[in-house]
Image 1 (cartoon, helix red, strand yellow):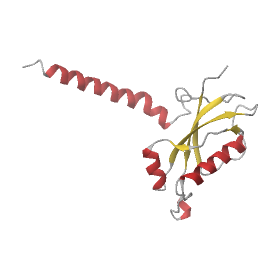
Image 2 (image 1 turned 90 degrees about the vertical axis):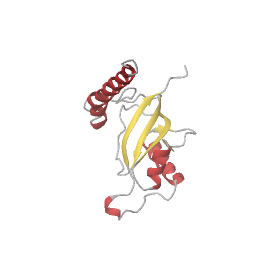
Image 3 (image 1 turned 90 degrees about the horizontal axis):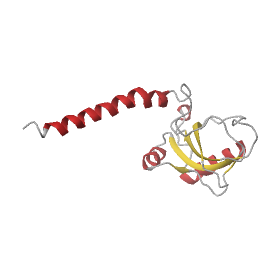
Image 4 (image 1 turned 135 degrees about the vertical axis):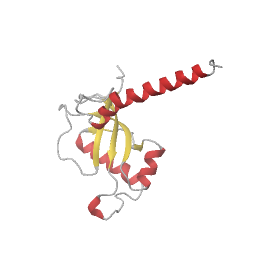
Length: 149
């Protein structure tokens, strides 16, 4: 009866290869995203007039604040992100920052750091977001969107 054993061994070998590939290639990039360049599809320099899909981390409860949630609802957090990125030089148009998925919605409700996504166009000639940051905004990833021309 060695025949049924072959698919099981092949699946186990494939799973091991995926696991080790993740551990050796993907995980180091996630732990140190600047060490080996930006993540696939993302950019480290911005281009004036280019539209981007943006993913940003919004901090949850701050350690010195006694565990108090920073925002009472999703709408307040979305407005904060929109105002911050518009002040930094992005035109969000009709885009509204949204929680990335249910897992991040649950994190937000629990007062933990959550990932938000939206689209925006960079309006400045500088290649980097400058100015003063905000302690509630963590790492942001910028993925260029195809142009309409």
